[in-house]
Image (cartoon, rainbow, N blue to C red; front, side, top):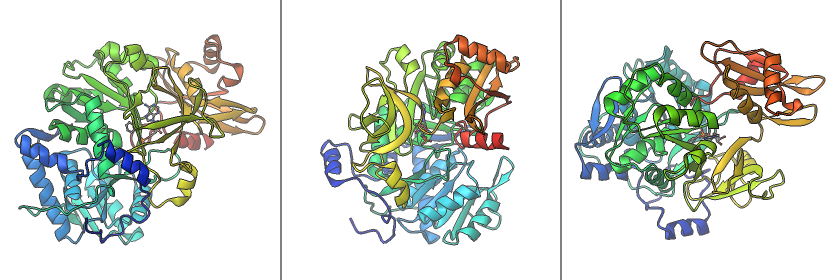
Length: 541
Ligand code: OOB
């Protein structure tokens, strides 16, 4: 492999040699570029549909997709970008997302996968941190002009020299297109193929470098577990740049089997149900809040959802009653997915008893995943006990990109990622996610896990959504504050009602909420998880 002229490898934390050797000996790294399955699919079924836009009905066959991606690749290079360069990609769900993404990969340019909800603070931070030379965005979406963000970005991060815009480019360039044959550069499959961004709700997102080898393994294994075939149609309705719809198995899993991916921007049931019916969608992925909404909507939205065989739910905790309700409303379709951009993905399996699918967040995807559940001192807890999940494995990073100070905190000396997630290992080996290390309220010296209180609140028939956060208090340190969204047609119950209800369920007195804040909705992060940091800020004001 010729050494890369670029500085891509600077600040990249590679796996340790002896472990790479072990993974390679097991045959789980195939040393091919991440785009290789696209070329395979073109060879096998050039005319099969690869990607469609739900909104316009535009469909690209596999041959079309590769030709379009190669036109982009040649265009990016003609515009002065080089293999190993980074480009911040911020596109809404569309066939063009797939064209630009594969175009960058075919040019050897490394995309930084940002989400449509990111704004200048995050984009500037990610562009600077990755050393990006280009920014790719849509013109205007949802009333927001991304070209203005681009102009701001050019000022704040002058190293971003190129801006490419879909639609009306304004002062910038359109996405480049140089049709014709294209020879992709050689790559080193153990170097980053793309950057994901961390999903944390505190601080600025961190850059997560995923290699060709590790991400291809992620896609293939996920597709196997989901039982994907060329006959499947996947609906990408979560933001496509997120790990879940991108590779778990998502777009990349579908390309690997030659299946069809449909992109939609509107996840509301009235719109998404039409798409499922029209394209006979078989698989999709949602966050719990959306899955709950879809489940409720089956009662009033007339739609034929019989094609849907797998509804993946992950990103935050799906409660047992909600999982059971979705199965009851839509058939036994739920698959729980507990994953992180840093690597580890857990899935419930097709053969699991439905009760296990409802109570657990799944089993690690690979036998090579090493999972430890540890106490505050880093010692393994007994099986069944709650502790922090630490993980090491073939597709879990060894460190964030160019972030040594974070790495000292988030990774152990022997290379495990400390996830901050609290889990319990069930006898089957499945994990149950019980909370986040930092998501506790310290009230009068007692530690109260927010998740614990939330689960009991959700059992109240008058409560549809609940988030529990601590608010500072002079006397008790923190007060337990529950922000609750009422059920359909129901007023939010009063504080005394709720306390009586929770006490009757056997919740300890020190865990009962001190305050109830009714709300119409809960603030969410870019991918749709409840944003506790934003809630705390709102309550502080
Ligand atoms: C996914 O990835 P990220 O990077 O946006 O967020 C990871 C964090 C996890 O550490 C955990 O705190 C939480 O999100 N999480 C869950 C969960 N799935 C993710 N917490 C409870 N139950 C679950 N099922 O969110 C992600 C990546 C790939 C596939 C699915 C989700």
